Image 1 (spheres, rainbow, N blue to C red):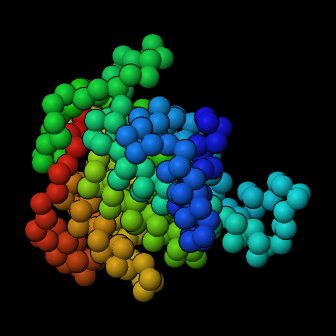
Image 2: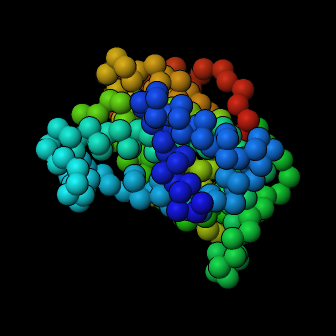
Image 3: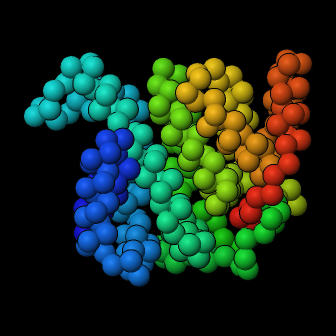
Length: 269
């Protein structure tokens, strides 16, 4: 099951409706409803490792290793696009399937548990609407790699692949709604470890700039859904954009920041 869960869960999110429906029916048949969250939580390490390995293949050429498959440029591009979109969409479905307690188990770890190799995670209290609330746990490395590196890269480096950006925008929206700390685990200003999140704050600033430059008509609705939610949870990421951007961009920034939203934000470190 550990070897199977990665490909199986991604097939559930395959762009082909027949593939997706068949995979979902098989999963529902194999795993009783009351056990699904527990099974996904237990197998999450293998599932996330498989997804991360897919997202790490950044170009179509990365998929030409299998001689049994057609490796024409067109086929490689289609294969790349299909797997990346399915991987991003499967993460979106994963976030929506698990409860907040199980998401904490999957993605969070006590700071000293990473050094000792323990996989147990916990958080203090319930999620707070204040995104700057201090939490006692830190993200596991796999969460940081997927959500703070590979997901952001899917937006900023997929200029010619709108379908990938669109899937990434949907996942950004889900992460901001469900567990914003996945996207930025910066320490609060009064913490001695505050520099740990500086790099990803810069990445979010670059992400916001890229999203404001979105022009593809098939991507704009998803972008417009994601950007206000990200803005409410990470307003400080706009500081550099505001200082370096044009007047029109700054005006757009201000209008996004003024959109009223009431979102549950996971506590920040």
